[in-house]
Length: 554
Image (tube, rainbow, N blue to C red; front, side, top):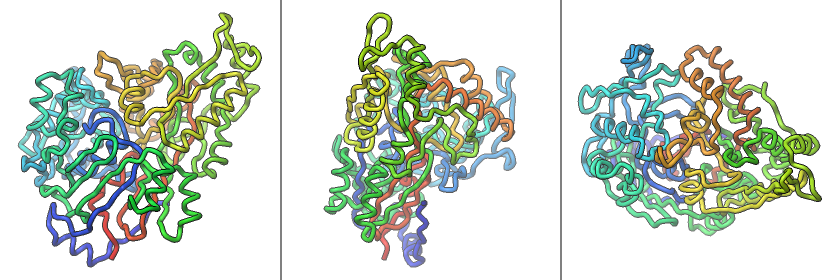
């Protein structure tokens, strides 16, 4: 269920009179999360821990709100064909493009007093387009053919195609040109390791949100204090400390001891832990379960000859009893996923291949693929054993339990599975991002509504040293049919036609299985009763995008 909390009128008036950038005297709020960011650069690496922290210091041009509607955060008006801020046009190559105009909030200012301007927008675009910059979603920047600057606060993107999501710019995270440009221009290929977001993270010029970073203890905690140049409602808390406790059992213990004040659903307790916590401490804490678009899955390294065979991939999924995992480990709160599109999303379809637990079907597929049972382990014609690694993040109790269950279940069909774990910042910062895993990697994707999976499934999005490890297609999946569907969905404005294309994409995904779908993960928020204003979204927009609304109840 989503949090529905009312703002006391007297406190609301106090916030209005406090003035931008001035805290209302709420003291310190200490948040406990399970991961430390691999980088603090907003456009490099895709890690939820970074998004959670940086939503307090930066804001995208637009994002989806709690009702899953596009709203402005840094911009002034959401562009549309109706209001004239979006206009169809012909591209230089003769194709159909679109011009999308945004206005930057007139009072948006970096923490060192430098205004946020179109110079920052143009610089961000230049970094995103550079093949060596290491920006994760480089496709976004390449689609913007040019930027027309009207004045310091107004600009137009000239985009190479008309997509149904033309008004959304949630992934365009503006960088401070006055700080980052000299670093980038000195050596674009080394930029990802030299950015000021990591080398000088407490520089006030890196923030224009309600808070700015004031201290960083690598691997341990990040402290934030109000940003005096913030243009929105004054934040309530004088200091926010984000403390990293990678073990979820220790996280719970720290909450009960008072070392932390809250555990967010984005990076906190597992659902089973939260259910147990609610039973034992529900009278003293507010526990919220938010269903949403968190897709727990296993990425498969398709460069591995074993996993390159689709029959093996299908056999693995038949060999895993996901319904039992959902029921026994998560009390049914995490429903089984049959594909990569949530049933909560309007484009979801049930008309896809499904893989109920069926060891006999799994065995038949493995036999057909040339893996014959030899005692308790399968081998191929050369006598090589069917052995795979299943990696995940260390300290996550639920994932480690799921690892062990899957290991046992796959042993039942003759597959030997080892279970290495890594700290999240290494797992996401290197192993997954640079495609260093050899077999299976278990983690979650958190997406926005109707999120086209270009970065994770398109052939052009496979990370490599040549493209600066950009893209998120960590499996190496490349299917021209999938590419064509992705391309067609993005430019189809008719909802019914787009729904049909989405159905075909989901069918192909569930057939090819570049990743093994596990379950849709609910987010469990554990909040003190005195904390108001935390509103879960159910999508990739973290609750901290509205941290200025958080306050102590009087």
